[in-house]
Length: 322
Image (cartoon, rainbow, N blue to C red; front, side, top):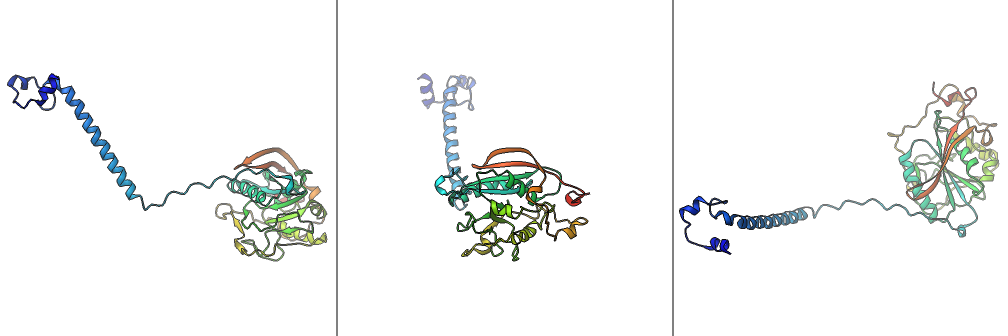
């Protein structure tokens, strides 16, 4: 109280008080300096909070016209198949090598897409581990042999092709091979004999064709040879009808600038690529399973088969680069 009265006193302090003055330019006696320091700090704190509030308000007003940052799309929920969906189960066979960013999009998308269509399914990623050139056909043969007895039809499915139209048919192709990615719908390939991208077959029909040829190392031509096998087996090829989305029916993930295709033709491969393989096929594929792993990608279950293919350099020397 004594100090407080001193602060309120309007009289001029004497000379001795000036000599004993503490802080703040001698205005206060030393014994009153702590009290005024407290009041000063309180005032500064209040002014700081007021300035901060005004600054934040100004920032908000400046950013009112800025669109909000888009959040990441929600991960697809894991859907467990129901026996009421039907008696058939699809083995989705994905020949694969090193295209992990595409796989991360593909597996969750296909699991949700097929589940919404009530298609019972299992997803198999057949991953080629060896140092030979990529062999899509052989990997599909391996996937067929390793897919188990609980699936009765297959989809030969490229990892970079995502179906967008819910009206596409992925059901059991009882009448014959069903080419989902038909030339009228595929964003890149439009010739009449094209059967690549996505092709459904019953396991019985795939056996009847003796699977795919194992002679096609590198990219391309194996599906053209398989078209001839379909015709040679006396099977009728079916394609979608009534799909109005045209070339927007699928999303194509492949970036040719980032993932260059192995299109080189080495030595006798240039002549061999147009021939029909009348001997080799499903039961002549040579391979070893390095590991078999059940994984979940984005909540979607799949089976990864790590595969080592074998190559007879006398038969197909183009399986490896010199």
